[in-house]
Length: 372
Ligand SMILES: Cc1ncc(COP(=O)(O)O)c(C=O)c1O
Image (cartoon, rainbow, N blue to C red; front, top):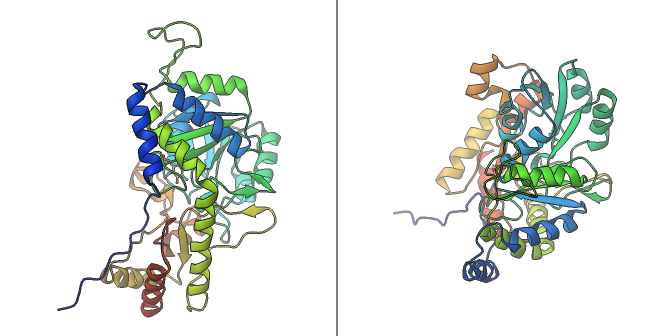
């Protein structure tokens, strides 16, 4: 009988005794929520990404939703975003009654093509949600110029991009409010959690009120000055976040090494297109390692091999406009965003995480080569 081979998981968090100690300290303190730890996490995070203010929230989705609220997005508005992203980049404004308009992507970077964004603007457009997909910075300056020209809000979905740099500066520092996410497959984790960075003190105060049931700076626990949410990150998650942030330089370096090793191992396999490289303006923070295969049929062949070899994978990312609820609600169909749809049919996420060792990566490369 064939010996079971060890699984290579798709992803995994990078935590150790430091996070355990940090959590224990909060538990012993008795301040499990709205204590000093969340404030400290916000200060350290803001300093790290070079933004004046940061507000911690319960998820990346919650952060995006709150920015849609602070931007005043509402019923009847159209908001432009990327079809090649995680569903939350569009859901965040649908919650507020706005209609999604998807601008197709650039085939090389997989980020929104500014020309497609410009072409999608109508008199009803009120905002753009720009995504740094797979940690590769979007064309922020071009998108900002479009937003300024048409008087639109610009929200940066940087949920996958902590540590990335655009035009020499960290993502989050450029001016538009940005959202980061800390689900366990991200560069750093808090379990569930997220962070909004902003350059406006007024917006920051509003975000902290909105996440905390609309409570004001003054007034008591039972006074609600606006319609708010419970989108708080607790102090336990915040403590994990602080411990993770301390390690961020090391985490980013290790992830760069894993990505470089994949580059070497996969370079010569016919039919495997690697993620687009950095350039002077765009420095990726490695979130996932997504390759592009010749077509859907070869992707399914690779997946069959991976399953036999117990190698993790995912069909990252389906185009949002073709999700069942989007088709049903808005009548979206194939052909609306051909570049995104083509990418969705043949991109594949390989196992990728901070502690992924060379032997696991070699097995992935062997399985890919054998399948193709
Ligand atoms: C691009 C993008 N936007 C938004 C989110 C939502 O973040 P969360 O899962 O923390 O709500 C994610 C996370 O998976 C994401 O990858």
